[in-house]
Image 1 (cartoon, rainbow, N blue to C red):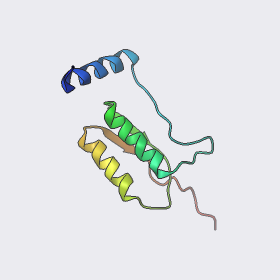
Image 2: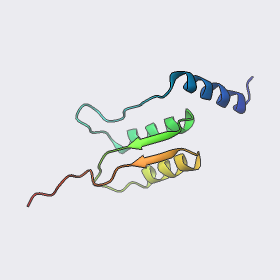
Image 3: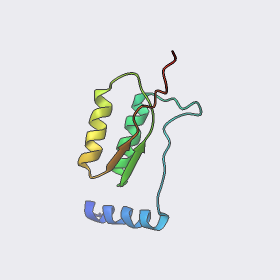
Image 4: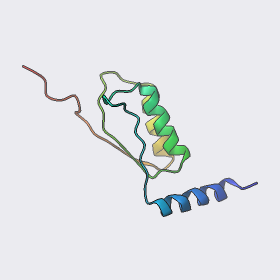
Amino acid sequence: MRTLDQKTSRRKERRRKKGYGSIKVLDENNRTPISCIIRGIYWCVENDIDVINMSFGSSTESRALKKAVQDADKAGILVVAAAGNGGAEEG
């Protein structure tokens, strides 16, 4: 049985060979439940991803999403997030 360090080393080596990866959590209409975004963040944590780039808007605040982002940060992942994706207000 491999140790956690050996598994992490293997993942890093596979990622080095691939170069980089991408996951998409939004559907074809650029919509998704916050739970899918959270699952995507934890997938990145579990798969030793170095950077998460998020660009989406939401009209609600989510403690669970905030915790997922904090957990990613604690795991050493650089989290980049866009702001102001709501667009210009009419009027």
